[in-house]
Length: 182
Image 1 (cartoon, rainbow, N blue to C red):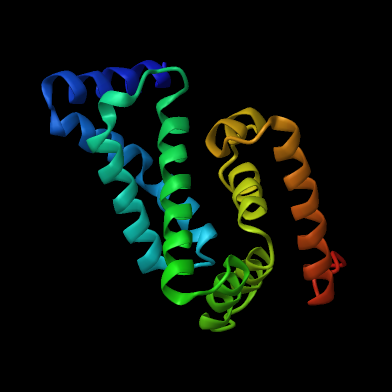
Image 2 (image 1 turned 60 degrees about the horizontal axis):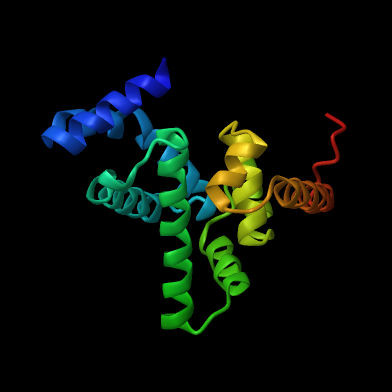
């Protein structure tokens, strides 16, 4: 039923230019999209808000390209994924930094304020694609197939990224006092 509701709202926006229908889609998906960006940016709230706004702007302007081959949420997450990687690429060009340095910079700009920051620091140690897969799977509760659609990677590659990311996170967290003996 959720998929039909989304498609009905998309149709109202695409055919009748009903902005209220798009507002309903934004209200429904703004928290998950912002949370996705919050994890990708290692807790940078203002940047997450900016990227989420870009995502919804791009979704609105290209809504007529939505074909319904996947769910609206998968299509929207794919736009969000592309917005994030466009941001990373633009940072590389302007700062002449590679993505790992951007991640390291992201983690050092934040103050150490407990467990949440430890998680963001651990996430910042991952490659972007590993962080994307791990956050979509464990924090956003997306299926392997949906993550494959969002990232454009085969399902087996998504599983490999998840496995490597879990191992890296476990190692990092154990080294920083989270040994699971609580």
